[in-house]
Length: 344
Image 1: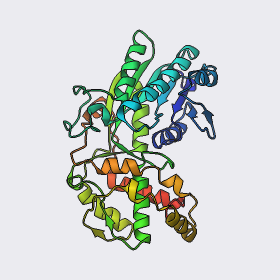
Image 2: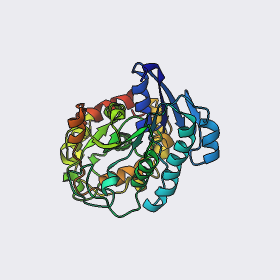
Image 3: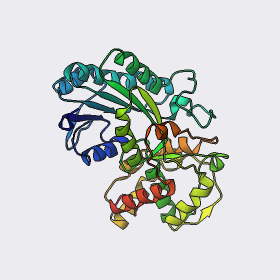
Image 4: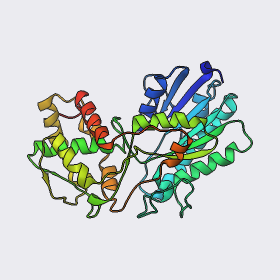
């Protein structure tokens, strides 16, 4: 395919994943990038993917799209409630683009370890792409099944990318663990407290892995060469909070005290006034609302009192050999938050 004809449509452009994916695509020759998000932004189309009519109206004229990268997500309080809107957004997008773009070559679907039942409790580790399914509901599975049915007999192909917890810098995102840790540590420091691990007993010593957003972007673009395959993508190293947590504390010049189980979503609910004073004291440029959206997700991650990792060898066997060190990833993200005046 002619390099000049690579036109990427990235759904979820303002998220941790989409933001880094767009930056990576724009750094590569031969790509033109169109971002999609609900609220819009520079170089983006503001579109409500839940609204089929709005999606067709906004995207029906994009006749030169060759690659769709789907990383959009809408949060809901239960696993069952997540299915209809998240499936509808993907369906509406494909319904609008497929007939409009005759040169469509690939649809990339961003998933996660929920495909393996990781959100339900202890699951088989390392998880592999061909592991048996689990009892629904699970929207990632429904989305992949939709693409499998839709692609049958078509010229375009799909890939499903399965990262672990993604480390990135996007603000206002409901799943930014690095930001939640950075704000929690900053508040602890302002209050003169040590940094306590707030998760469940047992979570402190479980094995986990993470996925750097930059690494994930590279893998996602690499996987467009695959034909209807799923790939686990993670940094390549495993860690325990019991080893990493003291290193994070040292980064923030904090002491470490024994873990104390608590819900960050609950204990951080009254911290807006404190954060406002911290922002004024250190010249920070973001309000509490922009840095407090991931407490529930942090509680979820810190509640994993079981191992959480997958086998990434399928991608390596297929030719993707990038990796990242998780502790270095965290420190780089913390540095970026400081540079952007998100934290002191």
